[in-house]
Image 1: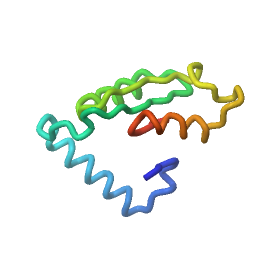
Image 2 (image 1 turned 180 degrees about the vertical axis):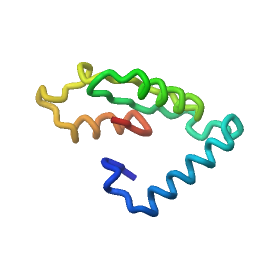
Image 3 (image 1 turned 135 degrees about the vertical axis):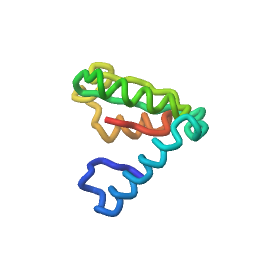
Length: 98
């Protein structure tokens, strides 16, 4: 599933996501490592300490390896489209947050 915008979700989808988040929180530290061996790319247009730290901690707690990519490290705006970047990154990582 590719989630580009929260507006792509129905009310039921959002409620289901919130229920899943509550279930994960209740099992925090007891859920194993469902993302063990996976890498997750985190792309930030602007630096955000709180967002970066919360995503890195969440990924690590689930067993994933988070990869931080700043806008300056990507070729966006220099001949490579967002779609091209997403397509290339998806070959190497299990998920992308932006």
